[in-house]
Image: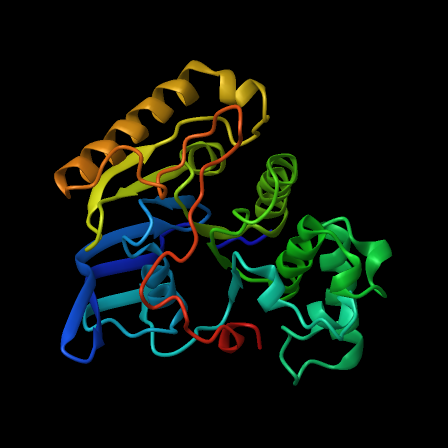
Length: 299
């Protein structure tokens, strides 16, 4: 456990980002500001295409804002910062199919670490995600949920104090998603991490977060900053049936719907997720800049 869990981890100050394609310009962020305290779990909740993933890339140092500043631990972000772990939605593109699970996890570690340290961190991370027995297998021999556990283990092996997650559970079935959500609750506590997670699933955001930052349609602006107020020990049944959860779910849904209505969209927008009998409603391809190269974060 770390002892430096007081103060701001992330500060976003008046950030603007636009993508240009020939004569057209698409503004995805325009004057957005927010902060994340150390040891917090903050979910960025917004409709598909609003700029959530672009904001996450700015936090990761993969995309410099056109205006404004991003600071981590009080320092301006200039390139990919140290002490950072990242987990993407598409585990199929994140993992090396020809390498073993252990090698995939070790791949994220700095080359200047000695071999015994790399091995110890790899074993520790695989144990943390429940895959100690799968170290010698290859990604293609694993289920989708297990592959995403490998991606999470790769991030944990770096022992980050900040974990960024871009819709990490959107590509798995509902039961696996619940298991992965509970895994995140546990490893966040064990590794004493600050977590910023992008999602457009309302239930997921409330279940995982200390705060839910609701974003408007593109260009993203902060519509509301909701304090969740639930005990940090979460339970898939009891937590979701609590009055606090039900109230926050309705509040977040109304905020998203009102934002979509003002933007000219309709309430059935596929990027706004409310879980029903058929599981979560999800969308793919959050931002115009979704094709950014990911390997920069995985080394």
